[in-house]
Image (cartoon, rainbow, N blue to C red; front, side, top):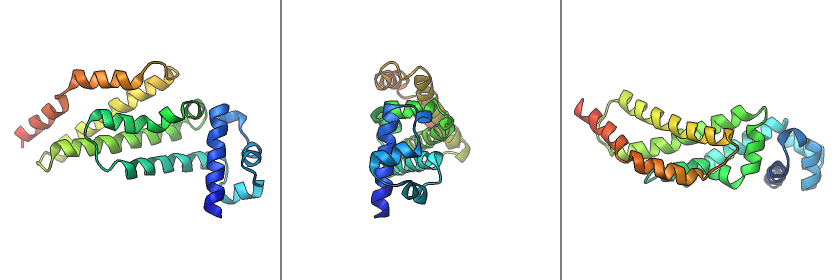
Length: 186
């Protein structure tokens, strides 16, 4: 039964987080919403930040399980913002709280994971220097993160997926060119 209880707690918390800011949610609100007692909550979680960290860690795990391979930067980007798109209000409430750093760390990890998958696919067993590979991954990861962070700072206004797709069209071939330059230097 503990897995069911933890699931109920997480679902109630996300539901409430989609309704109101984090600082207006208490453990009492969560346990009343999911029909358990406070002791059950504290058996599974130390506090609300621990609950947030577990939800975010689960989202990262789900993305890594779902995306074993990616075929484009657009697919990487969609994976990186999937949870955010599906839970806009909840994510904004976390983003505008003291737990912003937890969300930003998750977002950076997702960006790095997805970009690494795609860059390694582009490299395709060719040998480039480890430092060049790292530079390419880091620059793309930071670009993804920065675009998403700016969108969130602007309260998620605009069609981020369309804008990113257009950016990919404008930059098409640039990463491949970086890889080719690295290959020519080895």
